[in-house]
Image 1 (spheres, rainbow, N blue to C red):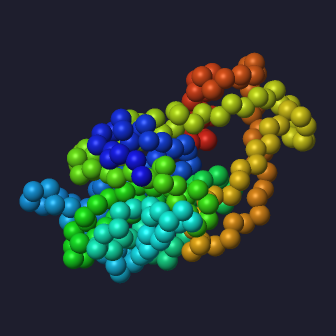
Image 2: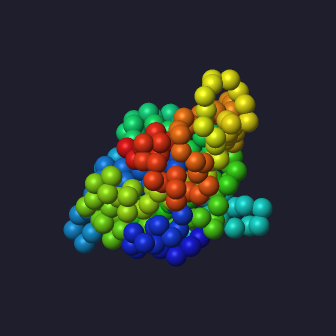
Image 3: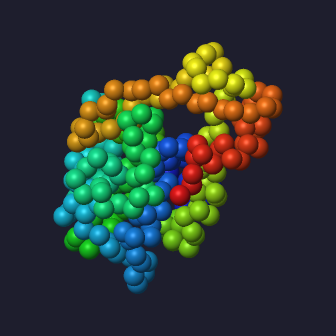
Length: 243
């Protein structure tokens, strides 16, 4: 597990929730604004009920791996995990968190938030993490989140938060294409085959992958870099929408 993330810059450097269509940054924004509040002495008050399965929360067992290590510290408080968009209760999450969940969009459901819960009313610790296969989390991508960072996120709009994280501009694809004059398949099409999203054992099996065909009609020369593609705002907005 890595060092605590205390600032937006730390969160950006961690790579959590990046790139699109991963949902972790939007999940974290929802958590900071709707699932936690702050009381006296900045105590983190739970505004949801993880033990009751709200929003897809379920018990995280913090099991030992094959090397005898645990993902999180061994403490007396129970851990709960949220973020599996296929878990019962996850339909309660806002649409902006779940709208791009698809087995055809690589890693669109890989991010998680894990909390330790004290007396069913207060969060003891908050962590962000991600799957690296169907049943295991990546210890090198697991970070504690500070109270201060959650407070910073609470003061921002979702759009400003995602812009500050360069959520869309950091994942511009490089697509080579030629102007199209017909609707038939030809080498002028770029076929993109995304792999299925990472998931844990509670998720349904990934559906069969399909090729996504991107046709671009333009009379300009081909794009050869993500910098040029970024200038095509209309196209990019159709690929990645912040909200």
